[in-house]
Length: 163
Image (cartoon, rainbow, N blue to C red; front, side, top):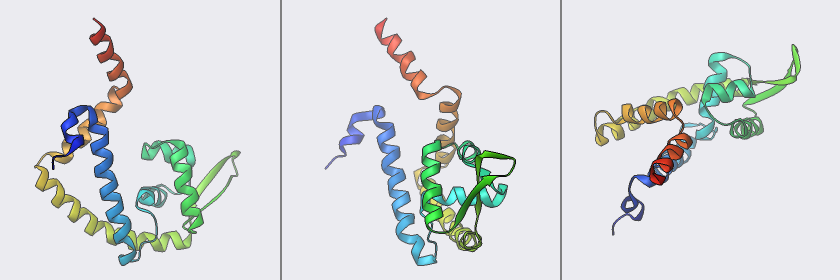
């Protein structure tokens, strides 16, 4: 049986990428507990950023990860629930909240970093199977969307359709 979404063509690129992301994230979520990682896969980058940069505000984290503010807040709530991060008012600016790793979060990162070695190997294998430049292609897509957001591309193409 053929794939309905594949038949729809490039207009369904986002659907394909979401399907692929969901597969990778779910695979990681199912595998992480077997190697002692309790953090949800989508929050791992937050833990790594806090480890590398120290305490950060939500806006800084969102900018660093290039994710939406509401999404980063949801991740922080989940990591707080798991006692992997904590939040406190910034002493220099009480309107700002700083997020930092807890001791439990630092211990989690030891397991995360070990798991990421295996994650990199499995991901590299997938990328090689797809073709030698597949990762470069994905980064190029992301960079091109930063240079000219997809909304503007849609608007430009819609104008050309009207002409």
